[in-house]
Length: 166
Image (cartoon, rainbow, N blue to C red; front, side, top):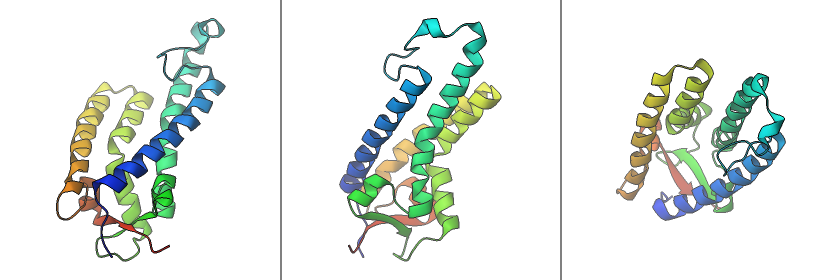
């Protein structure tokens, strides 16, 4: 079984990004927040007492991509990977167990998790740490270009992405 390199993984990530943007666009319409405008779609509907509601909306909207990406824990693939017939497996090609997939998810999404924690706790250093971790994980994705075809989060979790049989 051959590990998959950068191109197909990027393609799956782009498919996932489009799906997430559609889901978040619907979510922003529900909360009345503009996804692309950087603010409220209808500022008149919010008064000072609604700041907490807006904060809740921001937290919920930041959780949506994580919930979507959690499919990698339960299905060993996101819809983008499934469409391209890719699957996360253990390094040797065997099925990855649940604990391995959870470890990979936590490492891969650690920046987002730290930023959500920063928003919930209002501890700003967590946001800074999330940015640094996000940079490291982002650069670590380019390790897929090496012979092992494993991103940093794959190396930590001892996983790789393979083409499925069907």
